[in-house]
Each structure stands twice: as structure tokens, then as C-alpha cells.
Amino acid sequence: MPEAPKPPRDVSQPHSSPARQGLTPPPPLPAVTSRRGRKGRGLAAVLPGAARAGGHHELVERDFEREYGKLQQLEEQTKKLQKDMKKSTDADLAMSKAAVKISSDLLSNPLCEQDAAFLGVVTAFDTAMRRMDSFNQEKVNQIQKTVIEPLKKFGSVFPSLNMAVKRREQTLQEYRRLQAKVEKYEEKERSGPGLAKLHQAREELRPVRADFEAKNQQLLQEMPKFYSSRSDYFTPSFEALLRAQVVFYSEMRSIFGDLTAQIGRAALSDELRERENEGRLGELRALSIVGDD
Image (cartoon, rainbow, N blue to C red; front, side, top):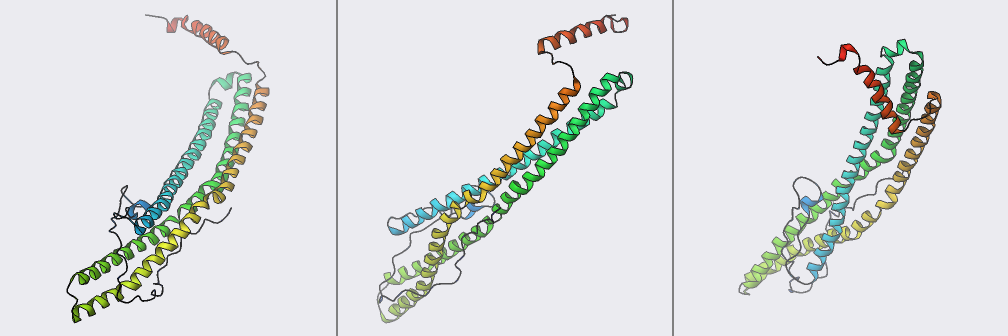
């Protein structure tokens, strides 16, 4: 089983500042609001909304949302698949355990003490049910190991991705705050002290902008790689699931074939079985102890 793909790395250290361009301010970043598409935890809780202005930054946010939205959907589908697989294996175990309980109850039925032929049939049935339960347990253990556990491991990488996006969002908010500060000084009179404050604000903005662009670029590069890795990761699990089912049902064919041979009675059609049961029920109703008052 391949290792779970690594989430995009978090670029936590600011990159070196870009070459200074005199006092020309960097282009402003459009306002971005956080979108909470659903309550609770998960990727959607920190997904930034689309930028409200045109230009380059709107395209950047659109690309980011597209890639991040695909991972959000992947996270939800992974959780659902893991939950459904667990329900399926629990139901399989409950079915075979119930079948063993039925065969065990039949063996303790007083009829078996009085009818040797019936005892033989019920004993053969009980043996078949216990064999089925044993193979079913092996199948469930295999599915747990090759499908459910890999799904769980794959899902465990999403919190790291979530944190990387949260840090990007925090850096984006700081970028916007400093950009607004630069714009405020640009609107004021260009006096000596004002120019000094403007220059200082631009210098504060540069590393934050570089940090945001580095985080954003890292995520845009690695989120598609993370998403595309899902097929290579899950293919061995689903192949193992199919093999486990094939082995189990092949054994069931053998078990119930042996049981049919031990019963030794030709199978009745549904119509004949119903007619036979109705005839015997009529004989019981004819008894005085169950007759109408």
C-alpha cells in the first residue's frame, strides 16, 4: 500500500523582498472575504471567497478557489467512503453472527431430539453457518487492513493542508491591512514627513506581499499534485476490496454447495412448498385443541 500523499508544504518564512522600484507602490490586492460553505471543521471553513475586483488578483483567487474546492470535495468523499465501508463491514458481521445464532437455536430445538433426520439437516446447516462466519470475519479483517485504514490515513493529511491555507489567509489579511495603510498615505499631501511615512509603509508591505505570494504559489503548485495522487493511492485498496469479495463469495458457493448435497432432498418450487405447508397447516387446524370455540 503506498504512503498517503503529503499535503502542500507551508511556506512560513518570507522570501527575499523584490527589487525596489523607487516610490511606486505595488498594485493593491482586492478585498477578499472568507466563505463558510458549511458549518464545522474541514477545508471549507477557511476557503477564501472570490476577489471582488478584476485583473490579475481575481484570476489568482479564482485558480486558488478552483483547486481548493476540488480538495474540499475530495475530503468529503473520503470521509463518506470511509463511513460507508465501516457500515458495510459491520452489517456483514451482524449478518453472519445472526445466521450462527439461528442455527444454534435450531440445534437446541426439541424437534432435533425426536427426529434424527431433522437433526442431521440442522447440524449441517449449523456447520455451514459457522464456516460462513469464519470466512466473513477474514474478509472483514482484510477490508479493514487494505481499505478502511488507508482511507483513514489519507484523510489524516487534510488538517495539515487546512492549516497551510489558514496561514495563507492570515498573511493575506496582513497584506490587505498594510496595503490600506499605503493607500492612506498616498492620498495625503506629499510633504516631507508624509513621504517618509509613505516610504516606511511601502517597506513594511514588501516582505508581507512576498510572503503571501510565496505561500500562494506553493499551494497553487502542490494542490493539483495532491489531488492527482488520489488515483495511484486508492487503486491498490479497491483492487484488494474486489479480491476479498471474490474469495469470500467463491467460498460461499462451495459451502452452500456442500450443504445442498448433505440435505439430499430435491428443491421444491415456491408453489409446491407453499401448497405443502398449507396442507400441513390444515392438518394442525383440524385438531380439536386448536379448533374454533
